[in-house]
Length: 166
Image (tube, rainbow, N blue to C red; front, side):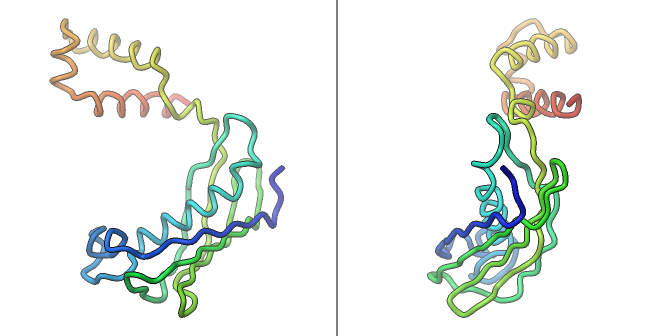
């Protein structure tokens, strides 16, 4: 059961792959803000996953985060989240990140409870979608259709269609 006060903690080491240079968010080899945000989202998500109904998950819907201190490669980052509000399917978390020297980031993160099935495609839905779009584009060959539009792009469009009709 989801209750205010649920908390979680995750730790990660800062690597060259999680620096601002590597992620394209800056010019320095320090822990990137996008990496910190991803850790914060993961910490929040994992804190409530076991409390959700079968087949449900959460998606991030809002962030207000301040990255207040740089962390060098090799240092460990610890993220702590606490669920502070449950409003129907909306969840609000306070979240903080620390390195060995102290606070490096803090803020709030909102997540929304979803039914996972409504945000993924079954094989049947995928095949039905290909048939539909082949008909719409008057393409006779499946191979030609996939080559022209690309399988990843088709799958993304079909999922977008499903989600927007959600």
